[in-house]
Amino acid sequence: MPNQLRQKLQSRIDGKTKPLGSLGRLEHLALRLGLIQQSEQPSIQLPSLVVFAADHGAAAAGISAYPQDVTWQMVLNYLQGGAAVNVFARQAGWNLLVVDAGVKHDFGIMPGLLDRKIAPGTANYLHEPAMTPAQCTAALAAGRAIVADLAAQGCTLLGLGEMGIGNTAAASLLAHRLLGLPLADLVGRGTGLDDAGLARKTALLEQASLRCPENLNAFEALRQFGGFEIAMICGAMLEAAERRIAILVDGFIVTAALLVARGMAPAVVDACLYAHCSEERGHRLLLQHLQAEPLLDLGLRLGEGTGAALALPLVQAAAAFLAEMASFDAAGVSKQTAS
Image 1: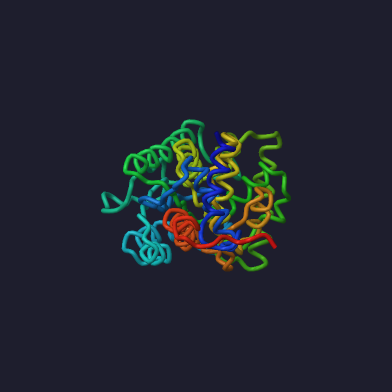
Image 2: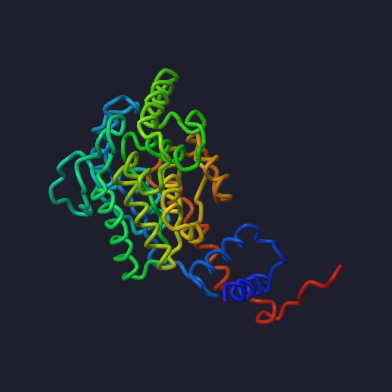
């Protein structure tokens, strides 16, 4: 069936009123959407961008240029509609959700905030596992449940974003342990570290990694070094893939979460589209490892899901041309003759 569907989709794409291949990568994107949704007419319904926020215990050690309070302050900014992801989501037509996965702040009951707090931040992975097994399992389940709810509402495209001071460090550790890439090639400036801060961050992460010298499977790597927001993103990806919801992967942190999800269920990558290549050091390496072709390369390094937000019109265009563009036969247009 997969090969038959691929052939039918390719035939539909080739039969549109255009020279063969003339829509370039949009044609490949349309094919991918059809294969993910298992449909000759894939559609983008209720595109939902979920931003998961959480704090990291290791942030107190100085792995970020910003204080930890910025996490909860940015959550309030999202809820007030003032962040970059809000602007881009409004422009593109995303259904934007903000999730407290484990922020070190008591928000109380706030309109627009999904309270899925596992704990007020993870433990400091420099000295102990970031999460207990029960916490990690609960975070994965919470991410799954959010996507299950979206699926019930008719969502066919999931965008994922994150906020958490220190989470580029966690992402670097996860990629280092799961792919074996040197930390020096993965650790970046995050929110804007200077040279001395970057050196300190790298040294601290080397120290954290040495705490667990043995090989780690995906779940154990996640619980040792991840964050609650990263774990919920993993769960969201796993659920989306099972439900044939296309996943629009954002930047470095979300891509690191994908490495974890892939370790748990390798087929999850078959549901993924890649929004952009960020400027965060290491992201290009992860995309190369995944053999991923990002839709955009704009020099972004903000996170939040901003790259995914910006890529939505391209995904919509791919689905729309497949659904709405006339075929040669229907339009009565002569096809290309052999040259």
